[in-house]
Picture 1 (tube, rainbow, N blue to C red):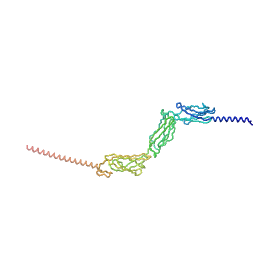
Picture 2: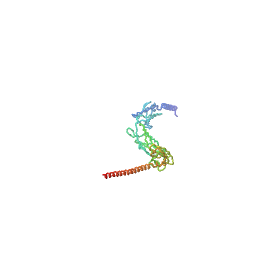
Picture 3: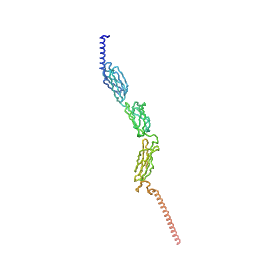
Picture 4: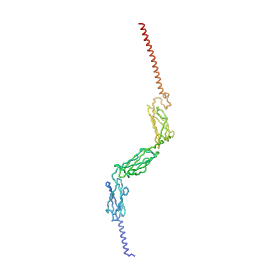
Length: 391
């Protein structure tokens, strides 16, 4: 059995140890401040920490440096250079836009962290796209490669973040191909629900470089397939109309030799009046009446038909509108007079008859002149005979 003095000694020693522990806990505290400074020219990060040390057991024992949230330096220490405030320097390569962060830990309790964004001169980037298409067929996929370089010396740049957006189709994920190359797949849209021009925008960013924006476009076209081509025909063909004349035109719209169901057709025309009527699937009737004209004029009728998913079809005809003067106006070819229908043959016949009459008159006059000349010769001969006899 222990003596009373031994027990008293143990109690005293325990009390001393307990008081020492609480004394350390009271004086121990976390770092109170941290400041970061980066020298862009020398590529040096300076970390200044304010922390009141408390003997050999109370100090900053660890510092970790992060660049863009990735740890690049991890240092441990046995003490701190100054009991209140001190600085550490770290050689770190960073460019404009990089985020540097420092984290410090107290050996007894607490921690602190701070960050800064590097500011410095920025380089320029340039790029090219391969292929750079003029046309892409609907509903196809093809791969595109973007090569990015430093503008100053054409050095390939890795680590560039690229966002690609298309107006109509779909752009897949961007893949880093290495050596400044980046690839993605473009999927052309369905022709049923889109226009015909695609625009792709590229947004490229990299720390230390100015953002690069690039836009390129191409036509969305149909595959080589006659069934997608609209063909517009018109019957009859127009060559000449008289002023005031009315004519009916039958229009058909086909694709792949089949009548195409289009809700309507667009018609443009000149020098007349026109009405339009849908008569069936891909069939229309146009009624055109020419204006009254002061002189012969060239008119036109232009028809276009379109439908999503098909190449637009066109038909245009030009014709002469004839000025027929101030006489009775006609409404169609069947109501013209006999003289109007046969004007040219009658004129030619009249010319022939007049020429014949003039020719006959010429020969009659020539015959009469010959008789007069013969009679005059006979008279002269008779006079000469009488003179001879008298002599």
